[in-house]
Amino acid sequence: MSAILLSAHVIVAILAVGPIAVAASMFPRYARDGGPVANALYRICQTYAVVVWRFHCSVSPRRSRWVC
Image (tube, rainbow, N blue to C red; front, top):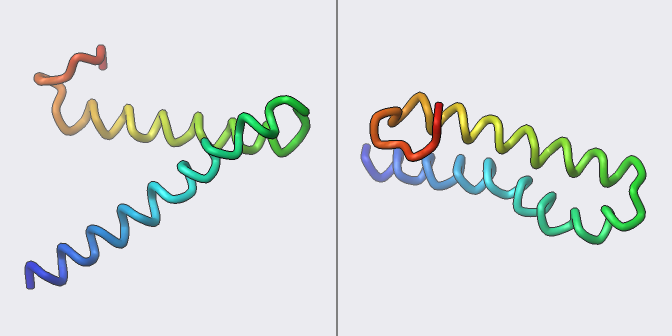
C-alpha cells in the first residue's frame, strides 16, 4: 500500500511542478515582446506562488521564516 501511495505522490508532484517549470523557463523569452503569452505565463507563475505560500503557511506556521 505504501508503494502505491508513494507512486501517486510522485506522479502528483510531477504534474504540479511541470507547468510552473515550463512557464518559468519560457517567461524571459516572451517577456521581452510583452503581449498575451507573457501575461499568461506571468499569471501561471503568480498563481503558483500564491498556492505554495498558502500551503506553506498552513502546514508549518511555527517553523516558517515567512510572515504568514
